[in-house]
Length: 171
Length: 171
DNA sequence: GCACGATGTTTCGCATACGAAATATTCGAC
DNA sequence: GTCGAATATTTCGTATGCGAAACATCGTGC
Image (cartoon, rainbow over all chains, first blue to last red; front, side):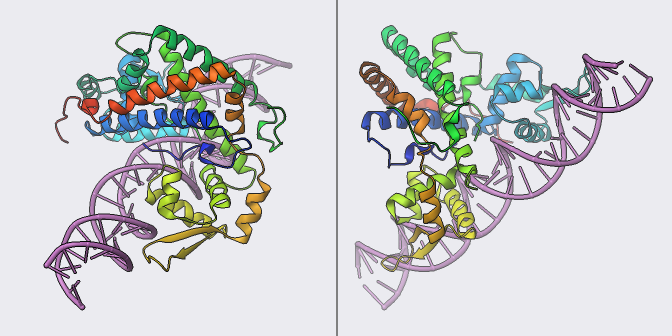
């Protein structure tokens, strides 16, 4: 699934930094490529990318509420409702109202869904993960450390005036 | 714009490697977060994420064919047609048939679009880029080197049997 | 000049994707 | 017990996003 590129595509930046652009480009590349591969793999089984993800999740967890499912695939409930609708229509999954809490719906694989899940042997992420596994221990350690830094930075700068169109301060 | 997570969300992997999962998670996090921020920024100006990207691109390049526009934002032509349709409806952009090659459509900002572009001062990627700028030179160099490795690996493993799982029996 | 493949754009049908509002149910305060 | 806030899910409207097919135009070979 190809995606509109995030603002990285915008060329007019305060200070042109080819390395940074290159890194951003790579992140986008890896992300979009992994989705494209998932989609291609899924289509061999008559599924869409998200549907494949859902099937493999349900194969592992047996039973998930719609909320926890949407949390796991990082989508809104309303989005997942649609995905499950279509999968239910295809007879791949079942919806069961929880008896304990009648607000909750448990999603599970049907017979057909289970069979299909078993047929799909290759983990969709294999290529991407393979790339990471191929790194040396040192590289892996460095990458993890830097990624954590990035994440920490972004996390702390989000709640703030990040979206207030305020001019940048230090650099 | 939140996205269905790529297959990284699938827990059953051949060899559980928490560092690798963590790295994948972070890449996804950075990507989705950058899109969320763009979207939030855009909505302050009555735009969607992709529309903001298009406006800033057109502010820089003045004049882009629909094809080159879709190339830059990494989307299909058919997707961009829709985006431009809606922006034209809002009076933000103009479509002009090229006289040199009458197949080509040049997209450009209207007066209104130019004014809006000027109002949006902050580069949407600033937070994400800011995180990268905050890294030490050594970190940046390491990250760039590793990212290139990853990209090279993925690139060379894509054309191959990457997508050759067991064939499904048609529906 | 004219057939014809290549190229640029749009159209169509479908599947995400989101946020806001509607609906159903639970749980706590009282 | 009952009201009201909180939680889980669905519904609705709109905007991407894709691939295949339709359409228009270009360029080449002849």
